[in-house]
Length: 331
Image (cartoon, helix red, strand yellow):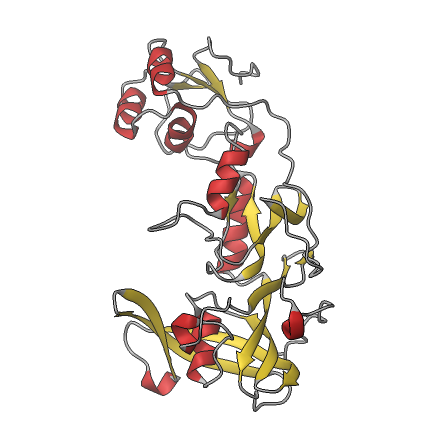
């Protein structure tokens, strides 16, 4: 193993702890900014060495591994102005914000809490998780800008819709990203939301909603249709969530929702299918653009770590204290 740290004059790159587990080819792409095909060719011909030995593109790098580049690569990297990777100090999460609905705006990029390299960030309503058509700003872009040159740029581990606010998990290392993806895929995390829905919610207590969702194009936009299981299509995906009412007011209902599946627009489509769309949801509720009242209020990791924050709503829709965790039915 090589324990030297990378310097601009060195052709040896040293893997940081945050990069441990990355495939060698992906590591080289991130560190050098050089084309994948070129790096692949250098690996195939032995011009790149991992700890002094030839290695395949999909070998996994480990902490303090030394990756030697051909000397002429340095000029190519400098010409391409690839970012210089900073030292191996642990990354610090963004400034803390408790999400209190007292009129304070969160920082440009805000943290709710963290557990080692798993960060819980506050995603503001109107901010996309990832950039895309028509969106130059995003949570991912803010992370990339703040931590440019870090050994591993923190990245959102899942997504929230652009107009949904609340807790969003991000990973500050490759291992944390893999851990979160596995926990989300295997449903070992608990994710709860608050939503103001139109109308008077007709059910008491906790109710399981089960629909089959399928995507369709409507006026050039992607929209999800929720149908009962008896109307299932081959392309449908099952959506499950538990819902309980917390408060009923004139014309609107405050609902607490725990999702069991992570489908696109799941909560919005399921509530709309029952005739109770999320307040302010233009796409599924045909309402006016007043801001959507859907908030990711709590995430619980497999080890019991809890991240939670209040929604930014004000006026009669304000929620002034966190609800208790939903007691889910067994079986």
